Amino acid sequence: MKKMAAVESSSPGLRDRQKSRRRRDILAAARRLIETEGYAATTMAKIAGAADVSAPTVFNYFGSKDQLVVAMVLEAHEAGQEYMQSWTPPEGAGLGDILGQIFSIYADLTMSYAGKRVWRYAEATNIRNPDSPMVQLYAQIEKTHHGDIAEILHRTSGQHGLSRSRSALLARVAYSTWNARFLDFIRDEDMSLETHKAQLCQDMQELGAMVSA
Image (cartoon, rainbow, N blue to C red; front, side, top):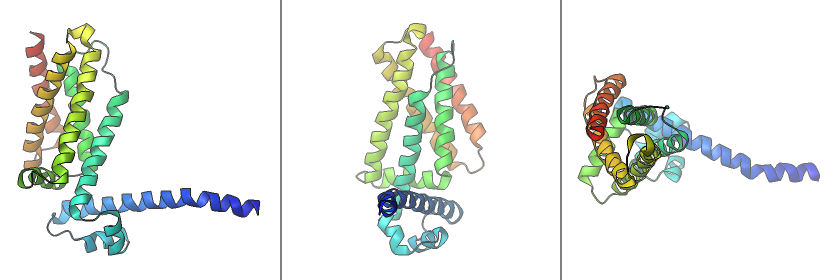
């Protein structure tokens, strides 16, 4: 009886792990298909086949392709937020160096969770459907990242003389600069991630120099 009870008590945890693994498999299959075939050509049935599950199972986890893309965007955001909570700038780093490292980390994480085709679709949806859940998610993500970056900058205020309000302003300006560079990057299939990060670091060095002048 004790052995049976132990098995039964472990079942919910096992089921949760299976659900989590199945969800990851579906997302991974969707990423691969969208990157190779494009968003329009990727159907829920194709995703199901690639993930080795039934189409109804895919719909149970994600009600639409848009929800799949939202999940990818959210994963990248959560990874960035988690990373930044424990990240600290190197001792003695200048503002430009700090900003360059922050956005290089964001760039790496962003592209590790979805490719250029996925991000192009997500960005296009922001323009086509301003009332969509994806747009609302983007707005919340930006607000969170602004706060995370501002907090990092403010923690170095003793070294750089930034008030909390100036840290918040610099975070917003730097994030807008990254957004513009990111749009250029995902539109250009030939641009490498390393080139994108090099451009970002140059921008952030110039921005840091202006603030420190």
